[in-house]
Amino acid sequence: MATVGLRRLRKAFGTVEVVHGVDLEIAEGEFVVLVGPSGCGKSTILRMVAGLEEVTSGEILIDGVAVNEKEPKDRDIAMVFQDYALYPHMSVAENMGFSLRYRGVAKPEIARRVQHAAEVLDIAHLLHRRPRELSGGQRQRVAMGRAIVRDPKVFLFDEPLSNLDAKLRVQMRTEIKRLRDRVRATTIYVTHDQVEAMTLADRIVVLRGGLIEQVGTPEEIYDSPASAFVAGFIGAPAMNLLPVVLAGGRVRLPDGSVLPLDRGPDGPALLGIRPESLTWLRPGEPAASEIAGRAAVVEPLGAETLVTIDVGGQPLHARVPPRTVRAAGEAVRLGLDPATLHLFAAEGGRRL
Image: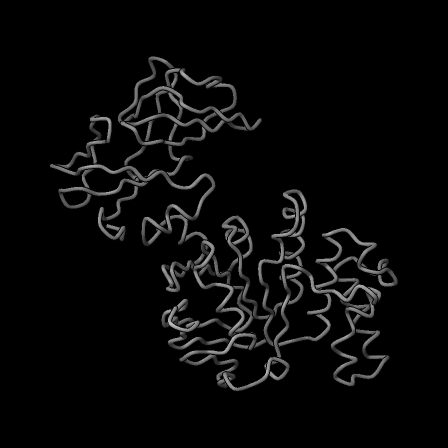
């Protein structure tokens, strides 16, 4: 295991700068997830750590030693790619042991490491197969096994689950979580999927436009987003963000209705409401604070229903109990607790 430090890390492709002076410290054994939309710089940062992209300026430190000038093979890292990058003519065992054979490791030691990694990943029965004979999930396990056998200081994952279907992604998230508990190596994991980030990370790094927007535990990122961007990115469905006006301890919603809210400076703002913070109210049921409207979209999911109502031209998404709202056009009343609301600046979106 090792620490990883990024100091004022920048990357430009010609005149286009894609990473703008990133600073980040990753502790020994920590699992850090870089998350953000396409083009935010997360994969570029990972490739710079791996040595696959040249650093424009700044430093990358592994165990306190600058590795900018080191070749990828000399950085003691192992990388798992989204396309698996397996050799089609080799067996699973040969794929997993290839890097060790390239480094001159003795055959008995290669066999021992490959067998151990295969048992950890539950693919020992597949060691003699070729990649074309494997499912997508099995190929991803082989790619992870190839990284494990090297026993590196740092694991790097570049969107490893993006090529899998929804069911396999859930299964592989569980496998990576289990692997993380067995192999306590320092890990940097890149994804655009905020569910992966929330379920896997010790800490999440939210990136936007080549800059770090927020760093924190999954709970910190979810409960106290530093900006409207983070609030809108983390959560499924994402947090509702409504343009409002604060005045005298009250907040005026886009439809003209008013709610009590004794927080924040008077003036325009963005009101953040998690869909799960809204409570479905029965007809005639009293509530201290409520938002009412008609269902614009109803999405039954079995265990719950997602309903969208129109609030002065702004969509508001809520999670409600199953079969409480069945069709668009139905009247919907939603209760809310002011303590669960979030406020962000109308300009710039920083948390108020």
